[in-house]
Length: 182
Image 1 (cartoon, helix red, strand yellow):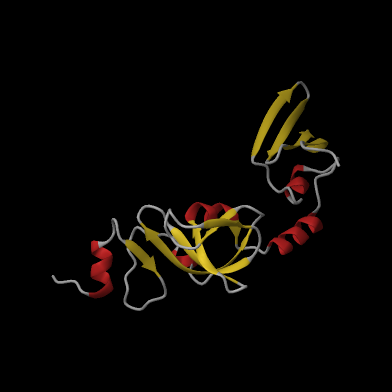
Image 2 (tube, rainbow, N blue to C red):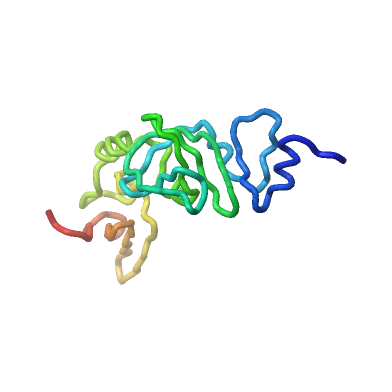
């Protein structure tokens, strides 16, 4: 069977050629490319320094850190082994974000909205129950260490950033946060 057009190029170029997914009609996406469902999605940079923003989708591209911003996913490109997400920021700047930066350093939630929600939910406090702690800004713990001693159960809730909540028989009796005091 004879293949023609972009489908033939995609079939031939799965290794070594630059493959691109965009909103193009009759262009089947090569199976190796992920995140195509993100095309057209709006995302935000989570925190300063969390993504690199490059001028082209190649390893030799000129990249810089982009600290803030809202962008729309414009396409996906894989020129070899590394996947790049083509993005268009609100200020009109177009560029490429490496896949790992895209997955770890961006969010579907506006950071200003997330911060306001976190402030509304508050931090854990002495006397809260386990359910109340989970409803705070800290949320559910990444890990729980449980110790059973005569007459009580003690839990250590472990959070990122050196934060801990200690519960005795299901009630918070201590909170620990590491870092510098201000």
